[in-house]
Amino acid sequence: MNLGLEGRRALVMGGSRGLGKAIAQALVAEGARVAICARNAERLGATALELGVEGIVCDLSAPGAAAALIRETEKRIGPLDVLVVNTGGPPPGLFVDLSDAAWRAAFEGLWMSGVGAIRSALPGMRARRWGRVILITSIAAREPVANLMLSNSLRAGLHGLVNALSREVSADQVTVNALMPGYTLTERLEELQLDVTKLAAQIPAGRLARPQELAAVAAFLASDPAGYVTGQAIACDGGLLQSI
Ligand code: NAD
Image (cartoon, rainbow, N blue to C red; front, side):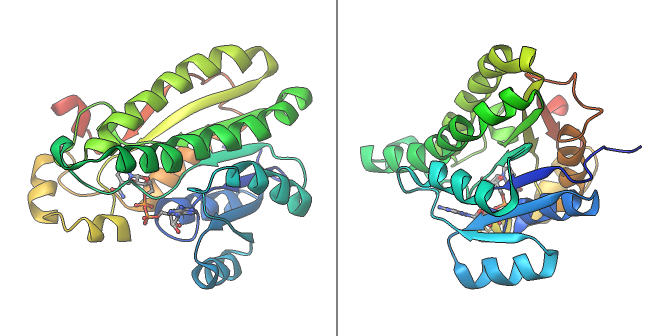
C-alpha cells in the first residue's frame, strides 16, 4: 500500500529512543521529512544522525516548551502535516505514594506537553486541510497497570481529549487518534524492571512487542489512506486488552 507520506513533514516528540525512535524510522522509510526531540543532546544527536532526521533539544516537561518546539520544527522542516505526541512515562507509584507535586509534574510532562504541541500545530493543519495527530498513550488507559497510578490516570484522560478534539477538527480533514502500546521491548520497560517472562505468559501473542510493530500502526495512522480513521484509541498489545 502506498501510504502517501512522501514529502510529508512529521514531528515525533520524544524520539531519541524506544517507540518514538521506531516511529520516526518508519516515517522516514515512507519518505517523510522528520524531526525528533529529546532532552539529552548527545543521544538525540546520535539518533538524528542515524535516522537522517532533524534533532531538536527540548525538555517537554518545561512549561511552554512544546509550543517553542513546534515553532522550531516548522522553521527547520516546514509546516507540519503529522504530529506524534510522545514523551517519557511518568514515574511509578501507588496512590498513597504520590504528592501533589508528583501529580502536577506528571500532568505538566504528559498532558500539557501534548496540549501545547497540538495547540501550536493544529491551526496550520486545519488551514491546509490535511493533518494527522497521534497520541502515544498506553493500554494502562483502559486497564490499570499495577503501581503505575500516574500513567493509569492521566492517559485515560488523554483519550477523552482525543475523542472530543477529533470531533472539533475532522471537518478540516485533520484526524486525531490515540495509539496504545502494550508491553513493548524498549529501555523504558527495562527500567521498570518487569518480569518479561511472566508478562509474556499473560499476553495472548505469547511475547512482548517489538517497537517496529507499534511504529507500523503509527505510520498507517499518519498516512493518507487513514484519513477516515479518527477519534479512536487503537491498541497494539498482542491481544492483551481483550483477554483481560
Ligand atoms: P522511553 O523512555 O524508552 O523513551 C521516551 C522518549 O521520550 C525518549 O526519547 C526520551 O528521551 C524522551 N523524553 C523523555 N522525557 C522527555 C522530556 N521531558 N522532554 C523531551 N523528551 C523526553 O519510552 P518508550 O518505551 O519508548 O515509551 C514511550 C511512551 O509510551 C512512554 O510514555 C511510555 O510510558 C509509553 N508506553 C510504553 C510502553 C512500553 O512497553 N514500552 C507501554 C505502554 C506505554
